[in-house]
Image (cartoon, rainbow, N blue to C red; front, side, top):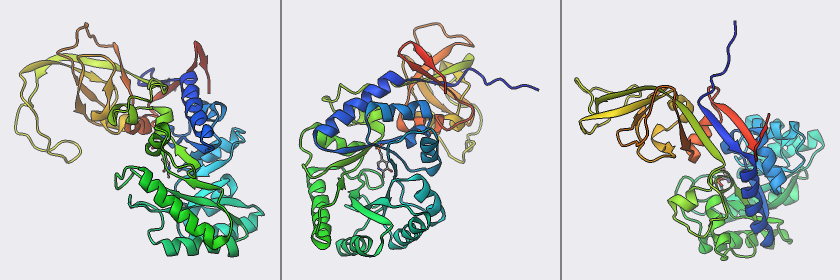
Length: 374
Ligand SMILES: *Cc1c(COP(=O)(O)O)cnc(C)c1O
């Protein structure tokens, strides 16, 4: 028996463009005296892509997932690895083996990391997280923050207190501002006063904090950022935030191609008694009469969120779909469309996350005109 992977859906990746994005971000960070961690969790650690983070000039390679950092080490990439998700107690041994730096926010976890470091004869750096109101990880109480940092400094010889950091715009949708950065610096200076030395890093956040650097208003003491989306897609800030001064970052690293399975004229409103869809939702439909529609051979399993697909061409509207199908309205599409045709899409973070981790989706890499094999 034999199975040959279908040619579609496929994500085509332009490595040269990715490398340029990395370099453009890294250069700007370095000009500010910053260390920049390239965040590759959004692409599921695909190595031809991760290598561009290294070659383009990131100082650290970061992920929330240890299995991805393992692949980085295995591939022989020598840049320090940074673990973004504060460690689970069940993964401490791997953290110490695979990470050079980790974010932390709980004393039990720091103690467990320290014990494991002593056991393995290693020392790892930690960045202690401060919650500035986004309400995901990090110390809310500043006194507790300072005490935890002093505990690392004085009692945990396996750990090096490298800095403090924060995360914004994730759960609480809080925008990074100069004021938030100054709050973080203030927290860092409380820690520094307690331990009697300067911290190596004050880590000001992710893609959304890069805006402050780009606009030239990032406080000098913020000297570490962790950037994923703005390197890989560069779409959130330019498209959703509407920033017009970031044209040096390209949004076309990735192209998704999917094949048409069916093209038919059909009613736009379902016919019969409307109940619930395959996912337990009760959607509503607009009746626009008979419309030309196309079905694609990919669905929620491949994409996560079908509604977030971004067709590259005019006249294609994404209606929805199910686990394995995407339904398009192509009534206004100006070209002829037949079964077997291939349509192209841009990715957003959500679809990129799913596509790059789905077994049904092929990945292909190009560097200029040259195809690169994994
Ligand atoms: C994912 C993540 C980042 C990177 O976020 P982007 O918005 O992709 O730049 C940075 N820090 C932490 C803690 C993260 O989990």
